Image (cartoon, rainbow, N blue to C red; front, side):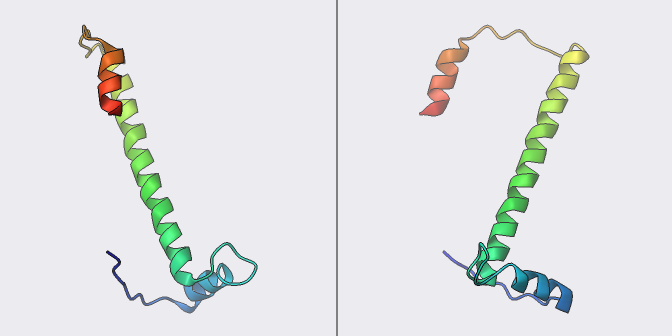
Length: 82
């Protein structure tokens, strides 16, 4: 379900948006441009969270905080794909 949001922008930001929309650009409308920026930012945040979790895992391994896995990783991954 779509929802709308009204924004107040400085003249500089509005000019930036306008320069990235319309003929000869990737975006037909300011809404498309702003939605894409929001999606990109969401992906950046998610990637940062994954990166931080990986680094935490490496730090755990370096400091010896590990538990031996005695299961079947292939079957576990196959179940996760379903």
